[in-house]
Amino acid sequence: MARCDAVLILGTAGQVKPAADLPHIARRAGKPIVVIDPAPPTIWDDAYTVSIVGHASEVLPMLIDQILLEKA
Image (cartoon, rainbow, N blue to C red):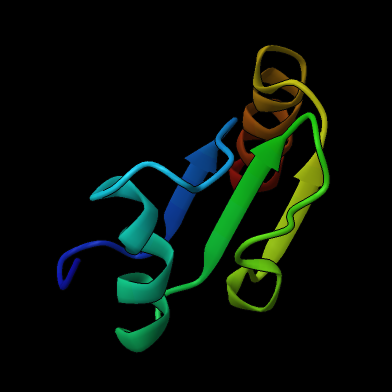
């Protein structure tokens, strides 16, 4: 966690351990947390920096396109 700039979480209910602990670990480390999920967040609502409701297969390509446009 110390070497990452941010945490990207894709399509999860956040209930399976040990992966379910990652948002808590990231928050304690002061890392931004971006979640992309078809359902609105419920378990870690307050931990997420950005929550995008949608399917990762649709949202992720648009997000990458936007990042690439901003870098150009």
